[in-house]
Length: 77
Image (tube, rainbow, N blue to C red):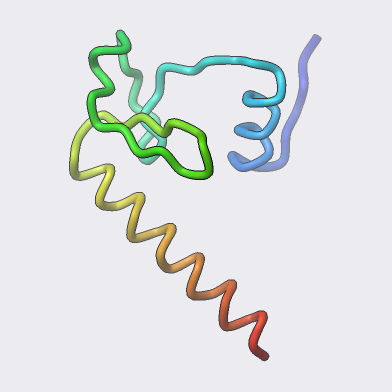
C-alpha cells in the first residue's frame, strides 16, 4: 500500500503516529547509518530530533525561530 502525503510535516506526523523510525537528519535529510551517527539531538515537545551535524542543528533552530515569530505575528493581527 502506498500513502501519498502533502508535506514533510504530514509525513512526520504519520511517521510518529505509526511508530516509524527514520534514520535521517531532520534538517537536510541525510541518512544517519546508526543511532550513534545522530549525536546531535534536540528534544522538542517531547520528541527527539536527530541531526547529522551541529550546523544542521543551528539551521533547524533558526527556521523554527522564524516560524514561531511568523505565527506570533499572525495571531496578533
